[in-house]
Image 1 (cartoon, each protein chain N blue to C red):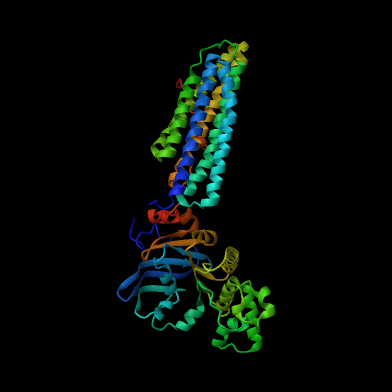
Image 2: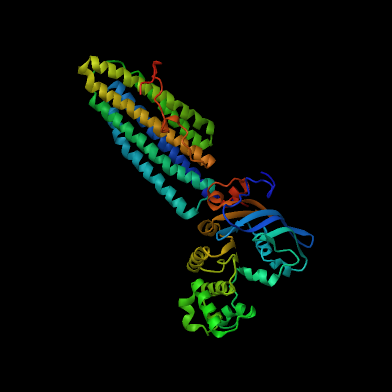
Length: 266
Length: 239
C-alpha cells in the first residue's frame, strides 16, 4: 500500500470534465492535523460519495470545499482546492460568492423559523433579487427542483417548521438551489430521515446530478453504493482509496477499504 | 468478545462447507456411474440415477442460502464475489450430477452387452475429471490459485483423451458396423466426461474471479480460436 495521494493506483482520476481538484490538501485544527495530503479530482455533474468510519475527517474535507472551516477558530488549510481551475483559498476569493456556487446541505434539516416561501427566498433576497415576480419564480423553480412543490404550493405562507423531517430536508435543498449553485455538498443528508424519506432524497440527488456536481458524505455505505458514481474511503484523515463506485464496493484495491466495506472494522 | 460480523463469517463458512459437500456427493455419483458402466452393475447405476434428486435438493438449498445472505447481510467486495461465485458454481456442479445420471442410464442400457474393447480411456478420463473437481473445490476453500491453474491444465489432457477416443471409435465403426450402437453409447459417455471437465474449468475460472475480481477466460478450450489438440496417440490435429 502506498501513501495516499502518492499511490496513483489507489486514487483514480475520473474521466470527463473536472469540477473540483485538491492537491496536497491538509487541514489543521490548531496543532492537530485532521487531513493529510489529500489529492483528488471530483468530476462535474456526477455524484461523489465519501465514506469512512466516524472521526476520519470526511466532513472536514467536505467543509474545505467551500471554506466552511474558515468559521472554526484555529482552523488552517495547506495545499490547494481548485474550483474550475481556480484556487478557492487564494486571498482574492470572495467567500460569499464561493458559498453561493458551492452550497451545503447539512445532516439535520435546518429550516429557518419562517414561512416555506421566505426560507427559499432568503438567499436570493440576500443576493439582491427583490422583485416579487422574480422571487415567486425562483421559489417555485427551486421547490420543483427539490421535489417539494406539489406538497408545499398550497401552504407557502405556512411555517417551514410544520413540515415533516423529509420535507424539511427537501426544503433545505430547495434553499440551496435557489441561489443557483454549481456544486452541492451534502453532509449525511439522510441520517435523520426514515427509509421512505431517504429514498426520496436519493432519487432527488440522481435527478439533480444532471445539473449539479454533488459530493455527499455518508455513513451509509449502501446509500453510497446506490447513488454515487465515484467513491472515496477516508481513514484517520487520509484518503486511502478513490475510484469508480463499482470498484470500491466490488473489488477494492486496498485491504483497509476492503475491510471497511465488508464491515470487518473493529 | 465476538469479532465484527462473526455471525456472518460463520454463515459464509457454512455455505462453503455445503458446496464442498455437494461437490463430494456429485463426485461420488460420477465415480459410481462409471464403475456401474465398467462392471455392468445395474443396481449401482440405478442408485446413481436416484441420487440426482438429492443433488438437485442440495443445489436449491445452497441457492436459497445465498439469496438469504444477499438480502439480509448486504455483502460487499470479496464477500459479494464469494456468494456470486457459489451461486454460479452450484449450477456447474448440478450439471455434473446430471451427466453422471446420463452415464448411469447408459450403464443400464449396456448392462447385458459385452464390450467390443476393454474400457480404458473412459476410466482414465474419469480419474482426471474427478481430481479436477476435487481440486477446484479445494481451491475455493483454500483460496489457492495454483490449484486453479492445475485444473485448467488438466482440461487439455481430458480433451486429448476425448479426441483420441473419437478417432479410434470412428475407425472401428467404419470397419465393424455391428458395434456402432455400442460405440455411439460409449462416445456419448466420453463426451459427457469431456463436458464435465469443461464445467470444472468453469468452476476454476469463477474461483479465480472470486479471488482477483477479474472475470477472465483462462482455459484455451473456452476461447473462440481454440483448435483441438493432437490426439492422445500424438497424431496431428485434424480439425
